[in-house]
Image (cartoon, rainbow, N blue to C red; front, side, top):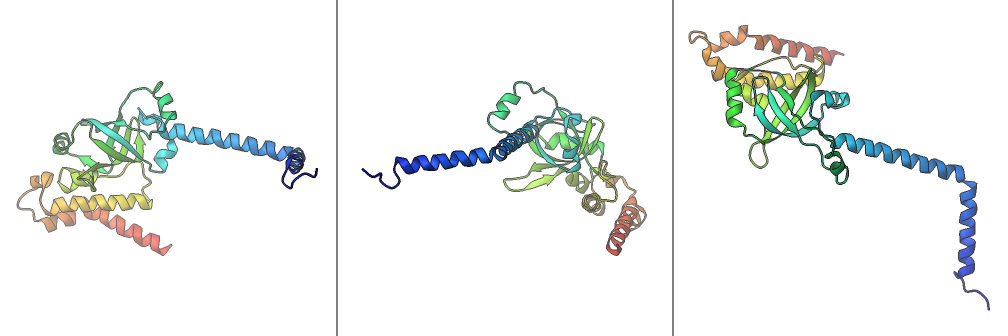
Length: 245
């Protein structure tokens, strides 16, 4: 009796052809298998790095700082040196469970980049921020055991507040150089301009530390002779130089 189309005979022929093709391309298949294995290892390594809990500034990869990565954490305490924050890494099932068995404990020391915090600013942070408060911190630089960061906290359901700008706008600190960022970079001047604007807002309203200025000194005179204008002039000259290139 003749075999029906699609029966065992045709299936056997298909398997034979597949076997012949595999034999002829054995090197290619081995290469693909090796490539898939390497890709899997790289993916695993990247996942491990992303899910690692950083307990020291020195644990953070250099490329994280160079790329200004944002990390999540929760506040433990506010000190004169800065914010002591526990890093909360990204959670990936299985990998995170394994890592928890050998991860050490420790807190990151975070400083508000570009801000010279006044004692009244430290007191304000201690009063306004609660322990275990979640926050995001963007890496801008690293100096010894401390991280220079932009720090964001939730303000309401959909809004966030940058602590660096808020302190300056309340007159609880002075704008300073952003340590860790190249002085000639666009990001440096973009952030520095934001901080200077916040400082000027407090200066115009005579808030915080600016109340200590002499009452007889008029604000326009103070602005013209302050470091603010000098920094603003640097900003303008930098922009002019970048447009002429």
